[in-house]
Image 1 (cartoon, rainbow, N blue to C red):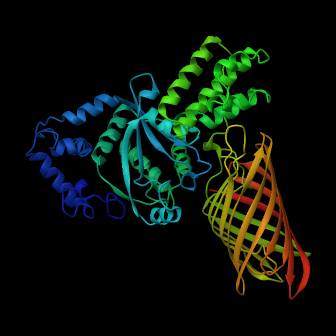
Image 2 (tube, helix red, strand yellow; image 1 turned 30 degrees about the vertical axis):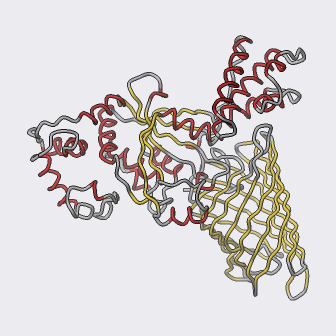
Image 3 (cartoon, helix red, strand yellow; image 1 turned 60 degrees about the horizontal axis):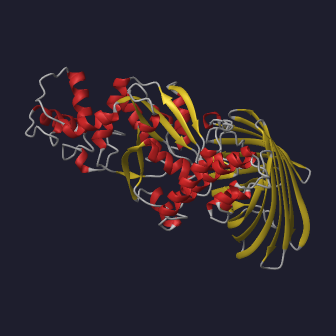
Length: 566
């Protein structure tokens, strides 16, 4: 309960009519029904609420509960064979705004050796963002317009969904919980089976409910106290780390990561065969007859084709019959080549070592030869100039980013007041050719005058890169309000050099044209240094054309910035 009220919104979860808001009445009703059972099968109170019965029995030393037979619950526990638990973090989905924060769920590990035979406990909004209007989906999610739904699925099905279908790397964090604590977690999960709660994207979301389960297993842990106004999936991993209950960290690369590794290993003249085989442009038997391709290169190409085939099938790019026929042919021909080199994928930076979500900024600089100071605050979450160690490359998602400046000339000014900013720069390659895009809604002063204007931009473009850097080109239609409604469009060229974990360089040049006939050039250069996990030093240069009272000039700003994340 929070402030005396349960966060479960389903009346079926309570035995007292006012159990949601009165814990004492719910306790009394629970004791009364457990001690005076009228049903002794799966419909009994003890079978419906095994966690309550166990807790009350331990706390009040009650040993005379009526005997009941819980066939359904006992079968579930036998199937799960719970022995330990793992917090699982699928990283961000680069082209889905609803998934850019990542996700967390729990895996209940059984006594069997294979983790793939374990079961996953998941909580998510009972909605499909791919089939709903994006704006309506966001608004309803922010204000509790969906029910949250619990699900219990084999772990391999969740891997297929996140790692294979959505191209998301999977991070696993084994928890220091005893077998009995995990069993208590399972009892709590069982009680919530079939119930619902209002789902809120930033508070009562997937990750928040996973914290509840961990606390139910070990009540001395207080994970939810780490959060007040937002619960970001990656932040829950940081909270679990702070509590000292992570014993082992593991990594499962996504289909995207695997295919990008094969792209490194397959020569430029052979890489096209992977896609050509999957789309039936080149027959496998003809490919196997090519003498100029080495045996190892054929192995890599066939292995990559199997991975790309599975990804294509998960995206419904072919029917099941075609998939099975091609899969059989690919695996048979690959087996005929014998054993080859094992694919060695280097583990990337662990998200648990990334910077925290909340950022404070203090900096000073010069503008038009005058000293100017800046203060900033951002509650969430990450931008392209932050260190991307542990984050998905080329992504940005910010909410309520505020930066103010103070100088003798302008006094206190709002430099930037971002409501929401999302960027997805997907580097195009042989296997993935997604469009890059970005959007921004809020106030900034990147216009011809000196004032901050309310603006919205939605742009698209392309990005290419390698392991050392990536570049992009974007076209951004824009609208802003300043003594009237003004439209325009800008073309931007950008370069991000991020081959080193301790530093990065960001460069972007923009040429804008407005509906009134004006043109404007903008230039931004940033050199960033990662001093530690949560400290960053940046040096920034900003240039912009401006026009005040029909007088054209330029404005240059030099800044030294210190960011602290917590």
